[in-house]
Length: 368
Image (cartoon, rainbow, N blue to C red; front, top):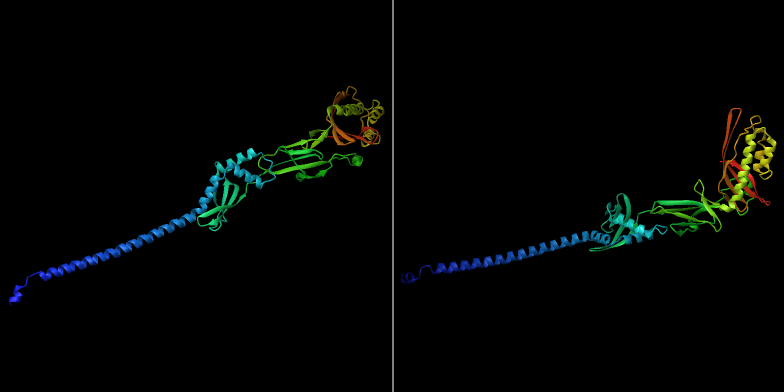
């Protein structure tokens, strides 16, 4: 009894309580350690996931960024160079091409998007201005490293020009001489079959055509030495004699047409004599000679227009068909009155001169 009574009350409780507190601290410390480890691992996984997502986004955007960088760094001069490389037959002025490339690739209306053939492994972008296709850009690479592999110019020149010229002419496009690859063969434009075989050194005509230009091409023609050129009604270029060389033929043609009009208009007044006067101005037995001779019965016999005038006759330039063949057009107007009837003869004759060895003479005439 006395030993039990001598114990201090509460000592065991305090010891147990302290042990309990210590255990709680250990458990709390362990929990904190585990929580910190978990949070650190969670943050690491989160960071790794974020890094992975960022990388994947960077990889996904890499082709687009490479393409955008290409567009940013490609100047109008570069596009102009690509255009000329894709169109070696272009005669367009380089300064104008450069300006057009700036307008198309840098100006309003320019846009780009993924082409229908676009894949992640082979990105392809289509460039347009409005509805006009300009180029197709293909990239190659992988990951974050992408480069432009090919640039295909889709822009096409649609302007063209053509000209028909004597075969020995020099034709230039925007100042550059055209070679035979731009010709479409030679042909004769002489349409008098009866005299075609009689031509000496005949002129043949060649058609030049230039296509695929960005701007309307300008074709210029340089004639062979000693000749002059004129544009015919159908747009073809024709050789003509100089004014001095043409004058004898023009004078002869005017004299002939006046004589012919006199024959037609005078009717029964010395008809045979008048016809012979016209026949004497053409080559005997030629087409012109037979045409006049066979018209004798068609002349008005009983109505001579004695007051008719014959001064309104004018000859044009002399066209060269061969070294021995020429032609020219003669405009005429004559009118007169007989027995109250007014008769007017007007129009254009085309006369052909041929030198068959005895000098140039009129061999054919037609109504134009």
